[in-house]
Image (cartoon, rainbow, N blue to C red):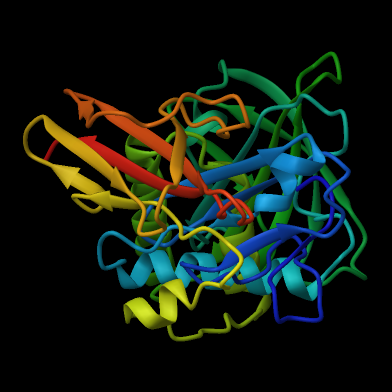
Amino acid sequence: MIGAWRIPGRQALISNGSAIFPGSLLQPQNSSDSHSITILLPDGQRILYECYSQLDCARGFRVPALYRKPSSAGVDLLARVSAVSNLESAPDPSGTRSGDSTPSDEAVGEIDPAGDVEVGGLAGALSDGSYSYVFRNLSNPTEQQKRGEIQKRGRTLSLPIPAEGLFKVSIYDRLSTPRIELLIAAIRPPRGAKIAKAFENVDALLKDWNEDYQGWPRHELRRAYLRSVMLGIAPSFAPLPQSPAQIRGTHAGNVACEPSFEPAPGVFKRDTEVKLGCSTPGATIRFTVDGSQPLEGAPPYLAPIEVKGTALTIKAYASAPGKKDSPVVTGIFRIGE
């Protein structure tokens, strides 16, 4: 997020990790500065809003409504991410250092009778050989860091984890070059199997969302999820608005009505045409179809927009004589099952 953002009617500014209802109106706090913000919705939509001039920032942006009922896993994931973000303003101790390009990965592993945890993923892809490790117990921050040597043999990496908890593990090769930063949730059975399954479901959900709307920060969200589960950071749930009145609200008389989409955004089995409309007499609708913000010079809407065989993001606003421009609205249309 760049710049300060607010929701009209709320005193507090939006912060990273804030819970924002679908349908909320977002406005830059100071419209003379450049602003950008990314909104993640539990039905898989990922929306970027940005503006660079006072005129374009002054319009504000309407967060789209959910186009499908979100899964309970999706709601739980984002609620946990929000809770973790709101709880601590300090840098995430489970993440990589600023400017560090070391690959990172996350895992859930059961502690075997020998006190080891088998880890795959990036760790399992390491070449066979000798490595050193340093791990920090995030569940017990006062515990000193521990170091050791390990041998990589086969398709997984076996790490000696002393107890249940969340651990940050740094893996180094024989030249002391950092190879991987791991965040490991180490758990004893039978609890481990349940958490591992839930983590697999989260990972599958993020892969699905990235296929629909690219750019979901998979590693950041997986880290936040494990921190919530393992460190006891409880998610805070809030009911999602359902009715059109809750989602859209009312229009001020001096503002052009927001453009509408026909059909409503969503997933379609075949190519379709999208019509834009505005109930304000004499209004002009300006739009883009590449995900960028419709600026003052964006083309006017004159004919239905074709969506063929792929995804299309339409952003639009309306202007009318004697009225302020409407907020920018977003519709995401996909062709597929």
